[in-house]
Every structure is written in structure tokens, then in C-alpha cells.
Length: 264
Image (cartoon, rainbow, N blue to C red; front, side, top):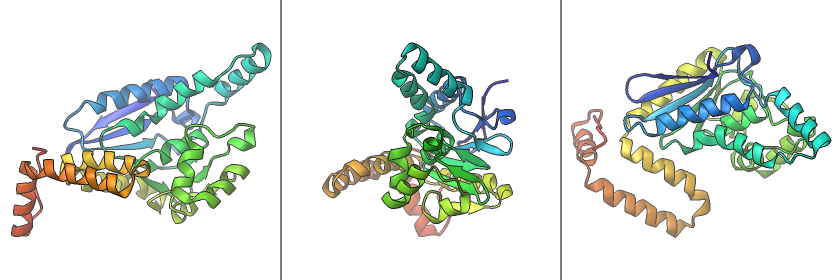
């Protein structure tokens, strides 16, 4: 059995599932390679409009596989092996979700610990089970946070809250993460995936070229000045004016009906 499953539905929506429920979707190099392959395949699909990322079973992901961590620790102590390159490969494989040209909605159906929480936070939108246990627990196992945790978390929940969570490794509930801005919504577990799919459907109903442009704009805005962002917005709008979708969007607004965008 593979460790990642991709299901493609209609309207350009794909669901990517971490599929190792017996081990609470613990993150291994094998799973990372499988996820990277799945993302690579989706990235070249011109019909793709949005992806949903979730976990099989009762957890989103328990984080980095303990056997993998133990092996890195053994090799470092006994052989002096520097794991930096290996960890960068590990991060790059899982964080490939950020490279999709369309939005990714994380449906955090259960616990997301350590690197598992980082993977969820790397997505564009997060819907979390209100009772799910969420924690960047790296400091509690003697590790500096990885997988972008020290970069992602302050941008989501603010510097002070991120510092407290990272320094202590405290595990909190999904409802708290949502209240602090780390997730869009916290819901009963049975409503998490349906809500993520609802959001995906609404995104899929927007003009696909614009959604792909927005993916870039929202990613780059942190590194741009306002003037630079205005230049980018003006350039995108200039391209949009020549599209069939703008004509359709304006006609739909005048006729008070939902638009039927084709991406042209």
C-alpha cells in the first residue's frame, strides 16, 4: 500500500490523503517522496483548480517518524554524521505542497504534531477538528523546530504566541489554534472534510487564472512593499482584461447569475 493517495473529482478538485493510518500518518522519507510525486503530478494539471490535503484514519499526522529521528541521532553521536542535507530533503518533499500553483486546503481531521502541524500550517487554508491536539513539540524531544515551524507559526498566530508555543512545546486543541489565527475554522471532526470540500468547491467556482495569480500574490506579499504589490496587481489585471473570463464575470454580474468560468 502507498503512503499517499490522490483522488481526483470533478470541478478540478483533488484530494490528497496521507495514507498510513495504522501509524497515525507518521512522516517518513518514503511518505515525503510519495507526497512530492503526487504534488508534481498535480502541478502540471492545467485543469486543477484546488487541492485538499488530509490524513487517513483518526490523525492528520503524528509528525516525524520516531525511528527516523532515532537513526539520525545515532548516526550523529556515533559517526559524526551531519544530518542537515537529509533534513532539507525531508522538508522540501513535504513542503512541496506550497509549490502547487493552486490553493491547498488542509482538512486537519485529527492530531497534528511536530512536522505534521507544520505541514498543515504550510497550506493556504486550514480547517481543523476542534478537539484535535496540535503542537510543535520539537523542544520537548530535544530538537530545534524544523519544517518551517519557526517561520510559519509567527506569521499565523503572532510573535508572542508563537514564542510561547515553540519554547514550551505545549500541545493545544484545534479550537485554540483557530482562535489565534492558525486555522480558518475549528469544527466537530465529522464536519472537517465536508467543510474543506465546500471551501474547495467555492474556490473552484472562481476564475481559475485569477486564483492561480492570487496564489503567487499572497505568497510574495510578505517580501514586497505596497508599491511593488500595486505593480503586480496592475500587471495581473491588465492580463485579465483580455480574458474571456472577465467578459463572462461582468455579464454574470449584470444578469445576476453565477459566472461560468472556463479559464480562458
